Length: 288
Image (cartoon, rainbow, N blue to C red; front, side, top):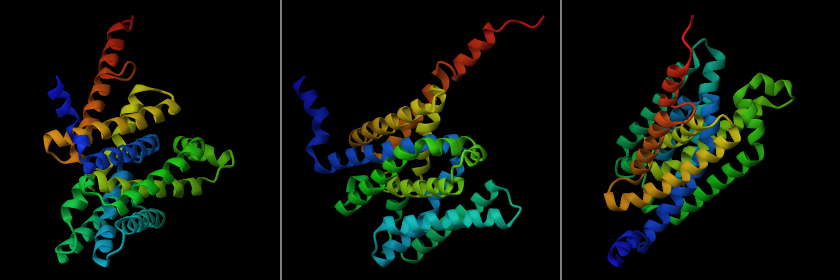
């Protein structure tokens, strides 16, 4: 018994595991909070776009010796601005615009990485490296996540109305344009924070899966926020902890756990799950 407890507590004997677990939990909580708005707004593809579009910014930051968060955030804002400009100046649909821009930025990032392979770590950018996160990067994650949570905490009602119906938000006197830019900025910033934990390839999962799972479990947006944030924190804690025993990528463990939770909700959600839908069909009266 004592030996089993010792084995279970072994990850906490290492400072890098402590840091990885609580940093992952912080990122998971902020991503889970924001994912509720992303799900309500239908911006899943936008989250995917921004998570890949920050790659050239990270590459340039590494090459110039600047903080990677600065380069990633600037690239995220530039890509969002590019998408908005193309959408406003052409007849191209929004999904096509997002697809064109994010693949172009991602390709530019990979080109820079291939041109300067000795100065940019491709694996770190694509898969993250929370186990080797530096003190400087930890402070960047704390600042980004903290700012995101504070803004969302104060403006969640306005952002909820904007995501649900932008026209109604304008009718009530809200500045829909400012809310649009705020949400885009928070999405870009959170993608930067999550990049360090799970990498560019898996950021989109942390920005979508908790909110999508919570959406199946409740019809109240306030409850959805708490559920998504809680799932983001819990899966990040457990995923980072489990990665020690699996000897696998921390980000992959976290996202796999989030996917499993989504599948459980998808089938067993009391009101919106597959089994509940089948039960309603079975119990519904037959037409005369």
